[in-house]
Length: 175
Image (cartoon, rainbow, N blue to C red; front, side, top):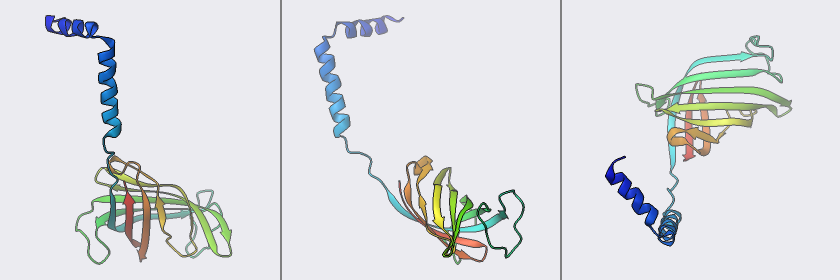
């Protein structure tokens, strides 16, 4: 070891314990009193151009078009995402999305599904994990309940609006 390191280590060994404890207590007090990072709330407008869509029964067989859904059916969609909306959006995608839902109940008011979704934006993701949604009115608003990267601990609401096979997302999220 260098003499300088040994001297510093030696100084630490001879420092009275009450001084070290007081210094530690002061640092802890400053850490607790420091203002917490404030949460940021934003509204994102994203146009999703569908890239794939599948609809299968519980055994994985394709469900024919115009067939009413049944419990156990699964739909899976992916898309490329562009900043903006279906009328005016960026020319290059800045993200992608995925949604997978399993029909869990059929009632007179329409199907209910358990859904998981991800929207990847610039190396981070917004997540909708294990959300139960009613599909009676088409594409329902979906809670955002997590994320990665800058969206870690995100929460908010994704509201979709379909235009043919494509979708405009309005996402109000706090992270």
